[in-house]
Length: 423
Image (cartoon, rainbow, N blue to C red; front, side, top):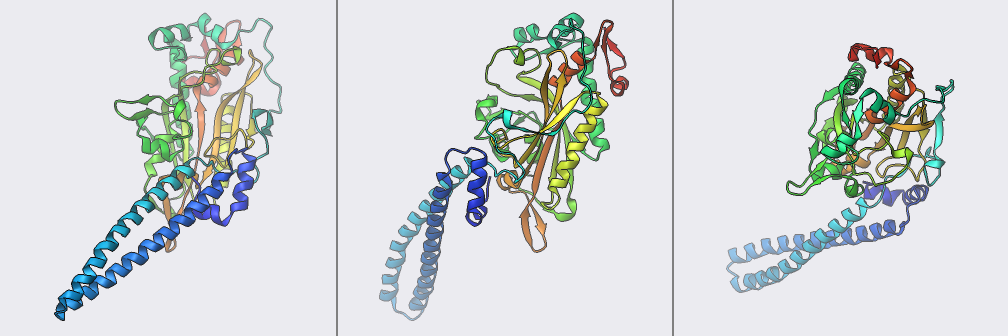
C-alpha cells in the first residue's frame, strides 16, 4: 500500500496517478490526510497527557517523602481522573489507525510515469511486436481442444466429472509435456540465477493481504473457511511473503527466487470460443520468478526479467508480442506491467501467458520489508513475473505445431519429453 508520507508530500502526483488508473473515488486521499491529521493531533495530545502524568507522579513521590500526604492524595486523584482521558485517547488512536489502514488498502498503486493512459485492454500499448511471419496453418487445422481429443492429451469432461468445469486432466504424453515444460522453465530460471523454492499451496490471510490479493481479489480466491486459509492464485503470494517482516542488508540484493506451483483462480463465468479448452481454467500450472531489489535498480531488473521471459518463448519457438498495460488494465498493486502474449495459430488470436511487473514499494510497505540503507531502513522494491504459465503455452504449442503426422515437440523440449512428436 502507499505510504502516508508519500501521499502527503506528493499529493498531486498521487491524484494524477489515480486519474490515470481511472480511480473513481479520489476523495479517499483527502479523507486519508484529514484522518492522519486527526491521528497526529490525538497522538500529540496523548503524549502530552502521559508526560504530564509522569511529571505529577514524580511530584507525588516527592510530596510523600516530605510528609505532605494530603497534597499527594489530591494529586493522585488528579492522575486517576487523567487516566480515563488517556484510555479514551488510546482507544480513539487505535480506531483512527484501523480506519486509515482500511482506507489505504482501498487505494491502488500509483502508475509509473511511462504507463499509457487508457481504460481497457484495447488501450494497451504494443511494446515489442512480432516482426516475423506468423504460423500459417491449413484450413482444416484444429483448435487445441479438438487436438486434445484426437491425441488423448487432456480431458476436460473427465475433469468436470472429478471436480467441475475448468479442471482439466492431462493424460499420457500430455501429462509428460506438462511435466517437461515445468522442468524446462525451472532449469532455465535457475541457470539465470534464481533460487528454486517449493512453497505451500495454501496461505493465510496475512500473506494474501501482504501481496495485494486481499481485499482486492478476495472473490477470485478459493477459501478454506474451516482452516481460514486460501488456495494460492500464483506462487507470487507465498514466495514474496518469505521476506515479510524482514530487514535485509543492502549487500543481499538482488534476491532472485523461482517456484513451480499449481494455481487456483475462481474466474468469473463467461462463454464463447475465447474461453474454450485451456484458454481459461480454474486450476493451472505456472512457474514464477520473484525479485527483491534496491529501489535504484528495480527497473533495470524489470528489463532483465522481460528479456529472460522472451528468451524462454524464443526457445519454445512460439511467436509472441509484449504489451505495456495501460492505467485502466493494470493490476491493483503494480506500478508498471508488461504482458506477454503468444499467437495461437488455429484460433488466430493472441493468448496472454505472462505478466511481468514492478510493484516498487507497494507490497513491501504492506509486508514491512525493509533494508538497511546506511543508518536508516528503507522499503525494498518487489517484482515478479510468470516464466511461464503452462495452460495457454500448451494450447499454443499444440495448435502451432500440428502436422498431418502429429504434433511436433520444439527442439529444446525434447530432452525433457523423451519424444519428438505427439501422435
